[in-house]
Length: 189
Image (tube, rainbow, N blue to C red):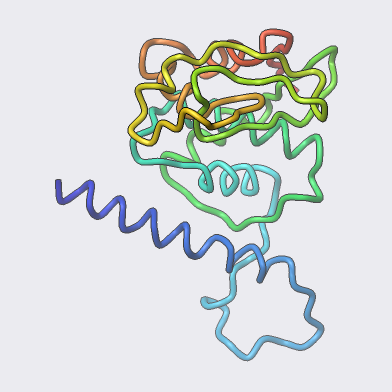
């Protein structure tokens, strides 16, 4: 129980720090900072560090390793489709491991990386949306098992809690993603 409490506190601290780190990384300053180097976040050195940070932003302690891998593939796809909309700092541990395993994998439809929307949960099904005509509605009944289930939640694309359920019940990250995106393939770039 103590380990879970520590993990939750660390996750909350990381969640609070991420927006600050992102804003500091995106600021342009021509003057030298007046704080020590250890107080100044470094800009990510490569896309792997950015992918790790994006995956960390969606991390939940209860997610399985395969769920983290699925999230990393999703973030890598969205980063490739629109890299200018993402800025982040580096995080390590299980998240780094998941991000590294997905670094060269992207979701593709007809060989093209397209932005894939996602939500924490759905109301038991995902929806079509005019803005994402390449996304189809699929069943996601396991979302109803979530403690934060909302019968009115509308999810277009991928349900993260659904991915987690599938991964915890034997699906690989790739299989879980393809459940929600049956017209896509996972490509090794």
